Length: 492
Image 1 (cartoon, rainbow, N blue to C red):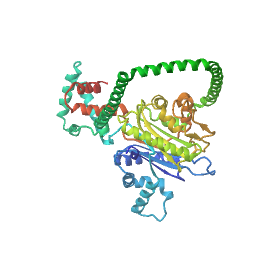
Image 2: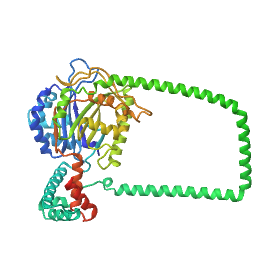
Image 3: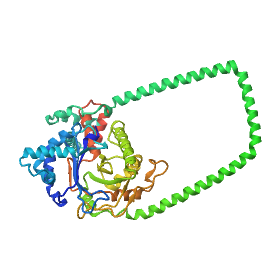
């Protein structure tokens, strides 16, 4: 399942020091590399919930995006087996002091992590059906093929078919590429077979139903016209005469009704314009804070230039919490299903470059935690969301707000004043990004910095897709489509 690939462990009441986690970067990286199935991982301190007692401790968040097909129990077992010594300092304050041996500590830590592990309530995976090792191998193949293409074209440009033929012959003779001769794994929906079959069956059923209805209507019309046309014409004539008489009799009443309707309509639109001006006036008060990014968040983004970016957002659900949490879970499940079965080729709507996006309802469903890995800058990422997935933005975040909360640790961002999600237009889910800067301000104020971040590969999403396409085209049948794919891959 898509949601199973993204797990978040939130342990409350963490008494540790936030400054100690970045010092563990090399050791934690070694654990993630040894696992070999983790795409992205991060650790962050979550501030206490609004309204908590003064001096309340933050929560420690460990979130991982892993290969498909790994259960949470299996993941926690692997994690503890590989990194007990590294993880123990983070969680030992919650353990019983009588745990002395490594086996006892490991057994307790596995149970503790699994108890607080949360599968994503909603999630989207852009790099579908690809394991960490597959992405790394395919990118290595991609680099070597590009180097060979550069060598072949050093003497002069080559036709795409000739270039593809030479490259495929060269790759076939490389024993190191034996693994690539098997087509890249694809589920039935990404291969398109089941989707095309379902579409064909649906179209056939629709054509049969529509054809049957059209045939029946045509037959009834023909029978009525040839057998009963004198009666039909007489009835139509009588109806026209009656309509003219009624219109003449009711014309004074109709004129007065039109006047009343015109007055009501003008009054309604005056109220709508007044309401819209009030919304814009409120936006002018919120927008000036749009570019005030907390230094710690800004520093984390600056360190990721040229690499996949990372975002952590924490918001509170609006009241009544039970109502909004129920609807939020419903919409998250729907979007997860759509992302898994319909948007199966790495693009959610028109938003490109999203690697992983996961939503977790934490603290008993009172807060919404969102984590995402994406290409490019934060502003461009939100711009893609606004342009390509506006409906999803409104479905999720319009049910949240920001309440005043303390910083999770010294130097971390806090929320000093309450904030609301920008008002939506039309229905509750449509056009809610009318106030783009307001939305970006809201998103910025909800962000938290990561204390630790692991990325298994630095490649852009487009490069991952291109490497897989090159693998299939290079070792597939020689035809114009595959030759064009190879030429584009090595020359782009």
